[in-house]
Amino acid sequence: MSVRRIIPNLNVDDAAAGHEFYEEFLGLAKDLDMGWIASFRSTTDPSVQVSLVSGDATAPEQSALSIKVDDVDAAYADARRRGYEIVYPLTDEPWGIRRFFVRDPHGVVINISRYVE
Image (cartoon, helix red, strand yellow):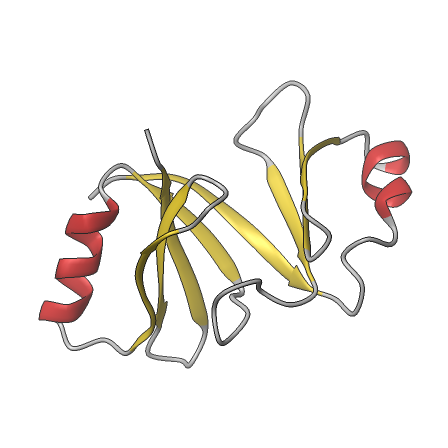
């Protein structure tokens, strides 16, 4: 597995609010807005990204980070082999992401994903 990008997920009360701070003040471009999640990226470096999350649409818990990988199936198999707690099983989401949630040894929930091709 190779990590492609790490995105902090800021758990907020309302992911639809405060966009002007990220767009106008920080100069980031809105990449995604689904109501419960909004993501903002640098216009010069797409690996620089932050997301606002007010409640995951399908997973039972919110994640603190999203980590984009080259092979999410291999990452899932490795996490299971190592006995890590799978918070949300490997799932193809309707918005084009294949993902699972795993809890790290400190209790932090991590969203491991890859875009579906």
